[in-house]
Length: 564
Image (tube, rainbow, N blue to C red; front, side, top):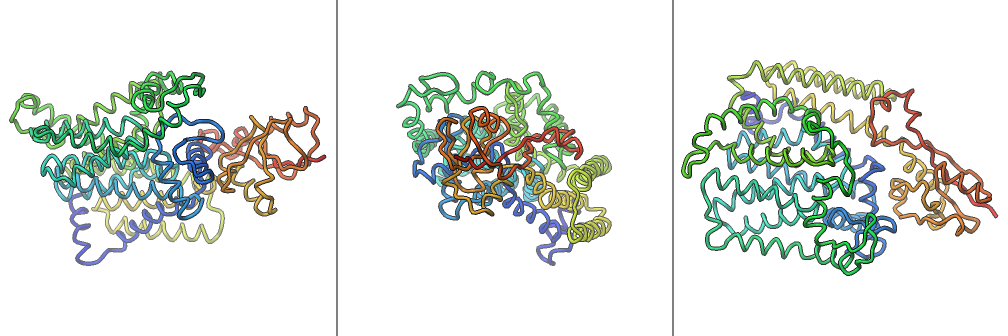
């Protein structure tokens, strides 16, 4: 590992090798290819429609999904996406680009924080580890709030550390900006986690100078000022209208919800249900796949850091005693991990905010212990890479095989080049890991995800509507049946829904089986213009992976022409 890191640094002087160039092309190419993959009919398309409504109506302070008030996440993602929609038009890549740009900033912040608290080598390793981790990669495909939130948290932490050391106003302003971006993306966790990390770092280095002279008060006031647009928008939409019915109750305060209700509701399970409440180890097994290909290395790094802290336990509480550089990373990660594990409502992407911290701990471990624990590191990493290759081959050779002759030829050539590079650089485990991982991600984004998302009925039906030049003004949903977020987004227009008794012929109706039956029961006559299979792509169960069983997950979307 040390040799690999040294080689990566020397390559800037002697030119980039074929192996390093291939890593760059495959990894960066995979991230960029993800921009043009259609949005999932889940949170991604849902969030995109909220931003699209802002653009359509010019109303940027209200969060509304179709005709319903949306009281869940704050405004930042929707504002950022709406800005890009206005500048570049409505498309998948304009929706995903803000998150990709924030991810790049998060990788850079991880590098700079590693450089500050450890050394340059650790910072470089941490940046590479974070960029090549699967959940970080996935967050730029299935774009929700997590890419922006994760990057805002690590950026804020880096700026806080710089501010603690140097007391420079630009660092304080940038930290305040990071706090505001994190909170405005997903609520109170955007404030709590970097603030906790900053406090623990001050304890680690025994430097509390920012508390003197009321410097911290300037930070608080700056964050409050930056968040005024969000709170004011929430006040206008919800606090001024206590009569609005949100999740079965009235009298909702948008401001109090952002400060307390969102986190309490998810933690207690009262507002969003109790998903995975009986799985106390949910985030443990989630971590094993989400942080691939580095999950086993990260566990080894966490164990090593815990041992170092245990050896230092007698001095951790002494005022002026030296504390290990990993202390605030381990302590922050442990506290946040325990907090989210105690939640009664759990989702895999909740873990993403910890990945920059895990990347730093793993990078530090590899930079320090690669020589002394080389055999164990190689064994664990080869097991991980072998499993990753097996799963990737299964997904791209059986679940959604590469079909065209050109595609198979390209895959075969790239595989041969990767294999040759791996053999030639077999002693450079870092480079081997990046080569294999980037190859797997390229297959996912150039073959698996495009084919999986092609099964979404909404996107397919939208293509038919465009081919037949059907005006979106004449398209409607049957209220309560078959609304497809991906259909609306692919057409760049939010389609209205009507009750059955409000339809006038002729009209084009998009609906599902239930809506079709309801129209028949109401005695309406229609012509079926098209019917497409609609698969729930977000539910990638083991049965769904088997092509012959996939029909069990199939619904249908219909395009009907209502007749007089």
